[in-house]
Amino acid sequence: MIKLFIANLKMMVRGKQALFWSLVFPLMFTVIFGFFFGSGTTSAGTVVLINNSNSQIAKSFQTTAEKSELFKIKTDVDESQAKDLLKKAQISAIVVVPENFGNMAPNSPKEIKVIDDPANAQTNGIVIGFVNQFLTIANFQALSAQPIFSVVEEKNNDRDLTYFDFVLMGLIGLALMNASVQGIAITMANYREDKILKRITTTPLRTWKFVMAEVLSRLVLNVFQISLILIIGIYFFHAHIYGNIGLIFLFSLLGGLLFQSIGFMVSSIAKSTDAAQGMSVAITIPMMFLAGVFFPIDQLPKWLYSIVQYLPLAPLLRMIRQIGIEAASPFTNPMNIIIVLAWIAVTLTISMLKFRLTDE
Image 1 (cartoon, rainbow, N blue to C red):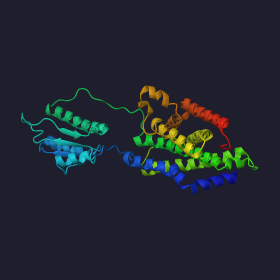
Image 2: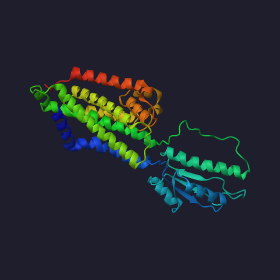
Image 3: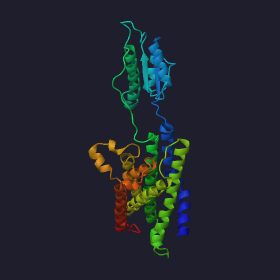
């Protein structure tokens, strides 16, 4: 079994295309999200500020905007050029301060204009919210009044968390899913087509040793995947991991076993390698977008959430995030573990009932 285990590792390394999808593909997502959301980045992009007023309020607004970490300020273009940049999606919005804004003359302008793209709803909300907040303070100062009501933020923990921290845990699950489901399903289907599985029955090698060698070699690949994602996320993009790294690996490998069992189920049903590949994609792509890799699934419509919360990837991600981000024990919500184990039991049962050594 040891020799077969080593042989499987060598074949995985030599399979450049499979190795790309297993290692490079999830790392690409890690780097992309790291550049956009890592290192505590909360920028809404670049905003063109056209300040046509020399009043003290207008100058204060520009200074405040330039010091803000919400966006980058660009001031070296006129309104026509800025609108062209906005159409090309090279900037996020345009803020125009009209001439004489902030002067106390009765006929002086009283509004700051924001030009934005309706497609960028989240960015628009940030820019307009910033402008409104500044003008609210300016109004109170102009009236020599103090606000009566205000909001006080109280955080339920002292952890510094970002969206990238959330996504990083999701990318671990994504990597495990893609490598295990597609790797096992396509490999086993290919072995059946090439009569390799049938030949195994004519050798002294026991079937369980063959399967165990395949499983262990995939788990080694999973360890490399998890390690690379965490190393890049933590040391290059300053992701925050507050939980036990060992537990992250342990429960991630439980996820590896989960998705390998799904891969075996697919290979037991598929009649060919092409069919196995198509079925694998049909399983992994919906889960990538619906099981919570990139956003919390509780934001989905209630009827959809009631379904997708039981997808194999969803409880796994809840456990990993519970460990890594919340620094909590995965056993505080045992239902996640129960769902994962139930999926493993169901898929292995189907595999044992349907799996055949040949396609005949």
